[in-house]
Length: 489
Ligand code: ADP
Image (cartoon, rainbow, N blue to C red; front, side):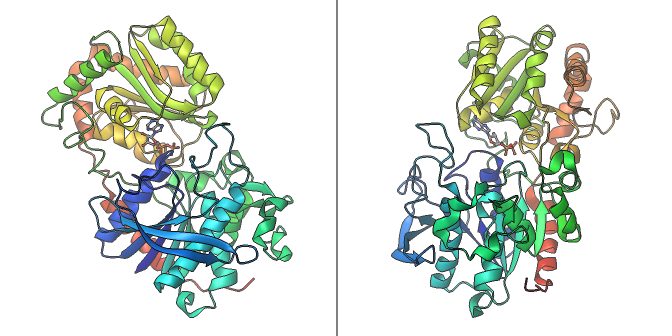
């Protein structure tokens, strides 16, 4: 199939979270299955053209934005170690220091609606330039939510797109791209589309809702999350729209890219190791303890790498922080986000200088080193569509402690319930006491029964989280999409 994959972030060019990782790993896996897949992503200012061998394809292209005067430039490169073609759109809206947030003010860019509308339009113009006829256009998250709409209302009658079907993936329904209508005024979209039957929702424009209405096939990133987003608790107001599309809704957990997240070959950790030679993991642990000025001790390390956002359940950790430290553990956090919570965590570092390290920054190397050095990884998420870190952790022999939600539910089973097969510690409700109980049980296994702990470590390292299985499921979803017949609205 000819597949166009569109995403606001793609590793190694840009990343704020899991979307960036997946937007590289997924196309690679589909390419390996034999599909002709190309990626489209914005060119942000921080992306270094030389370092990534990014070359200009054409200047002075014009996308039909507003009066038809939106000029953009098209660039190209390939994903590292693969033949997947990546195209970059550069225009005045997209070419900024930040991806979503103005780094000087810390605020979201005020014109994000136009930024990502212009991006989506430019992708279609580029496909026409390249004479690329897609079987599937696959858009991701709110940023590209208008892609299925543009396909069905502007492009499907053109010969190049006459057979094109759209697939849309919700990676996080908590971010829908909701804006006052005037924010898209420059887009010149006919007013009729602003009603609630189409793009509008409660008199605002809602990018994700638009995709739910217009896409041929809707997907999300775990089977549990596919159920959850049809409920009021998790649907963030979109549940009733999702429910109407439930026959076209699929939930597939991501795989992980084992060329990047694999302790056997990872160049970012001090000692490589694998399930047969776990000694290297101990070296990674003492190295990191030393680097972060912690006591170099046998205490178990609880690691966490996260956006500091309410979604991630960090308040539960904060509530139980002192009780957790009383369990004779070390705690390492890497993350950025909510300044208030950042400060509260920082104060704990002062209280436990030898056992607690709080790193408020975005640092990919440190992220890999924490995965390798930790004994446990905390993900007490309020909701977690898929989650990659629990799978990265297991690949590194680090036992996840998670709440039973979304992709965590699809990938982690409780060791306490089933010691023969369990691969982590799972608690049910987003309550600090339940979270703490899971931590207590996990740490007690480490302190009191090392042979069982090591057995568990080896078990999780042997689980196959590669993309192979997921890619085959995706192929079936694409085949379903090709069978779809669109009824004009
Ligand atoms: P989400 O996409 O909700 O942020 P995931 O668990 O799916 O959560 O993916 C998070 C990804 O972002 C992981 O690759 C993680 O290592 C990375 N990450 C998050 N915060 C940081 C940080 N401060 N520094 C480096 N990497 C980070």
